Amino acid sequence: MAKDFRIGMIGYGFMGRAHTNAYKRVSDFFDLEYRPVLKAACARNEESVKAFAENWGYESIETDWKQLIARDDIDAVDICVPNNLHEEIATAAAENGKMVLCEKPLAIDAEQGERMCQAIEKAGVPNMVWYNYRRVPAVTLAKRMIDDGLLGRIFHYRANFLQDWTIAEDLPQGGAALWRLDAAAAGSGVTGDLLAHCIDTAIWLNGRISTVNAMTETFVKERMHNLTGKKEPVEIDDACAFLCRFSNGSLGLFESTRYARGHKALYTFEINGEKGSLKWDLHDLHRLEYFNYDDDERVRGWRSIHVTDHGGDHPYMDHWWVPGLQIGYEHSFVHQVADFLEGLATGQAASPTFRDALETQKICDAVLSSAQSQSWTEVA
Ligand SMILES: NC(=O)c1ccc[n+]([C@@H]2O[C@H](COP(=O)([O-])OP(=O)(O)OC[C@H]3O[C@@H](n4cnc5c(N)ncnc54)[C@H](O)[C@@H]3O)[C@@H](O)[C@H]2O)c1
Image 1: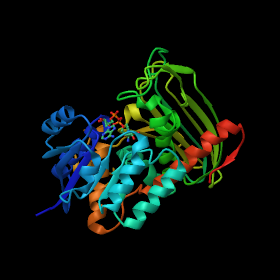
Image 2: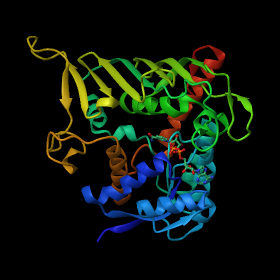
Image 3: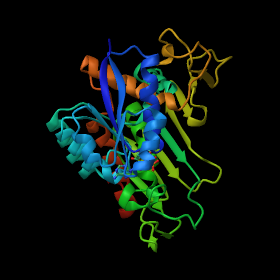
C-alpha cells in the first residue's frame, strides 16, 4: 500500500492546473512508494478556489496561504503563484516542516534565492524547483547522449525562447493575468520568465556558465497598470539576448522576446560538438535531431529520432503507451513528480533542488547586470 503524499497547492492558474494534472496522473503510470493526495487548494478568491478544488478533486480549500502551511494534514506545499511571493511562502512552509515544490524562477534575484536556500537547508526538508523541460524525454535523452560522450568536445550552445503576446501597446500591466509585465511581481521580464528555462536546460546539459554579455530592450515604455489604474513605466525586459562562455570552453548564444510576431512558445536549442550535434524544438517535443559525424559518409546527415521507444532506450517512455506513440507537454510535469517521489523513497533528491536552481538565478542576475553596464559580467 503506497504512503500518502498530501499536497497543499497554492495558486490555481496555468501551473496550478499543470501540477495538479501531474499529481492526478502519476500513480496510474508509475509504480511509486508514495501516492499524491490532493489535500487542499489555496487562493485568495473563495468562490474561484472552491470551483477549482471541486473541478480538480481537492478535498478542501484555504484562502490564506498562512493557514495552509500551518495545517498538519499537509506534507508538501506547491507554490504556483507569481514570483514575488515565492520567498515568503517557501521560507514559512519550510519553517513549518513542509516539503516545498516551488515554481521557477526560484526567486526575484539571487540574493533572495540564497536566503531561500538557507531557509530550506536549515529546515532540512525535501525541495525542488519546477524546471520541467529537463523531463521531456527527448531533452533527457540529449543529456544521456552528451554524458555518454556522443558529441565529444562541445563548441557551441544556442537557445531561443520566442513569443509574441505583448506587442499591443494597449495591453495593460499588473494584476491577475498580467503580473508578468509588472516588475514588482515578476522581478524581470523574459529573462526570469523564459530565458531561465533555457539557462536551466543549458547548464544541465553543458555545465557552468562563467561570463555573460547581454542586451535587453523594453519596446513599450509605459502601460496602464491594472492595480493603480494609471499609466506606469514598464520596468521589465521585453527582449533579451546574450552571449556567454561556458566553463568547458564552449560558447553560448541565447535569445528571448515576447515580440517575435508569429511565435507563441518557440523554445529551441542546438548543441554542436566535435563528433556530432543535437537540436530540439518544443513545438516538436517528442523528436531529437542528431547529426553523427561517424556515420557512413553515404548516409551521413541529420536524423530525427522519434523519442517513443521502450526497453529503457528512451527515458520515461516505458511508462506510457506503446513504442511509436508520443506524449506531450503535460507529461514533463508527471515525470517531475515521479522523480521527486522516487527521490523521497530512495533519499536521493531529485534535481533541480533550490540550491541547483540558484545557479540559474545567478546567471539571470549577471545577464541583467551586464545589459545595464553594457559589459562582460562574471556569474557570481
Ligand atoms: N514551469 C513552467 O514552465 C512555468 C510556466 C508558467 C509559469 N511558471 C511559473 O509559475 C508561477 C505561476 O505562474 P502561472 O502562469 O501559473 O500564473 P497564473 O497567473 O496563471 O496563476 C497565478 C495564481 O496565483 C494565485 N495567487 C496570486 N497571489 C496569491 C496569493 N497571495 N495567495 C494565493 N494565491 C495567489 C492567483 O489566484 C492564480 O491562481 C510563476 O512563478 C511562473 O513563473 C512556470
